[in-house]
Amino acid sequence: MDNIAKLVTRPELAHVDVIEKLEDALEKAKRGEIIGVGVAYVTNDGAIGTGFSRCEAGGSLIGACALLSHRLCSDD
Image (cartoon, rainbow, N blue to C red; front, top):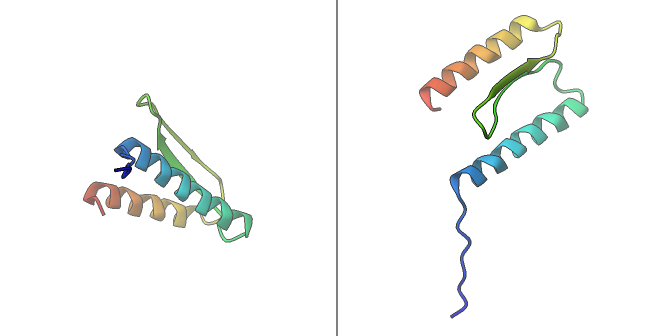
């Protein structure tokens, strides 16, 4: 009986999701589809960080951050 299954931990799944989200955004940026970006992150030791690019569509970026805040709070 050689039915061996790999158990995937929640942190490992989260790591994959982080990479997928960042790579998707990076590819869009390389194609010129993204003109501004805001980033918020949590490190594996619990530290937090933020960053953003200045762009002409600053108001839209603020709106996107507000929508993200709402989605995080509603677990959407």
